[in-house]
Image (cartoon, rainbow, N blue to C red; front, side, top):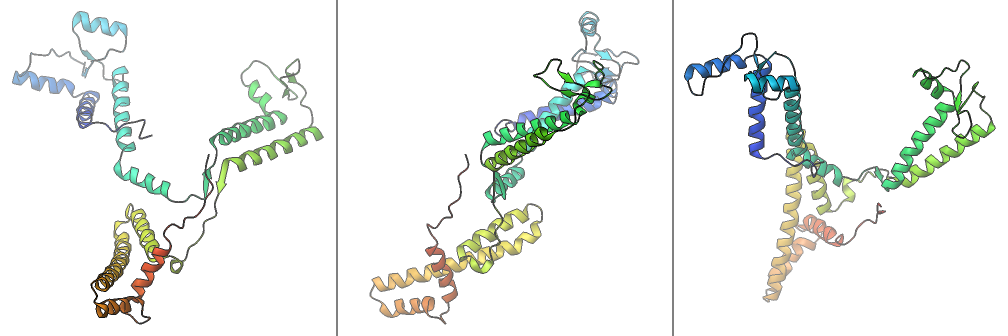
Length: 316
């Protein structure tokens, strides 16, 4: 939608604001008071005022009104809604819609929603359209079998069916009356149609059951990603509740950076021949009771997960 309705420019917003103020003043009948005030200041050529006419007409609603305006230079009309008001209202609503559709917070919500795995997603649009038309056809089929389609047609006044009727496009006449009882063929037809609908829906949608992932099963970098995503989602509606999650994600990220920095120091010391410093740094990381053993565990697990991706079915 945002690609179709572009964001209005600043001058468009200013122009719409001016038009909205003009419309409010004009529709409540205060435009003649504004014109009288302007005439008193002699800022513009004097605009004539007509008694009992309080609305300024810029877009005539009929040819007679247009002729009257151009011949008699009468730009005042009765205080009621006209074509001019409808055009202005539609223009203002379209501007508001473009502002809403291009709202940055709304775009962020949509982007976050698209990133989240969906339990139900569309696999094929062609099968979706086919399923939609199959459901409509089935509804009309059932309504016709029960005689409700004939009752709807009766309301138009073109025909009456005292004992009910069923539409048959292949017969002559088209309406079969009285309404025949449902037979075995009708039930088998309905059963076949329902099977076709189920098949179409199966080809249309992918259903993924939500998997609850325990926090302990995530690597350190995955916890950072998860907490960041949770903070963004919660922060859109409840900013105060997102702060602890952001702090937790930031602290985990600092732990990873700290372990990475210690590893770099150990590698650099080993290159320089300082075995003692290198061994001390490595001991901090790899020893079971090392000061940074937990940080190193999180970093090593995160590094081992690089390149491992879940394989999911592709959508058409």
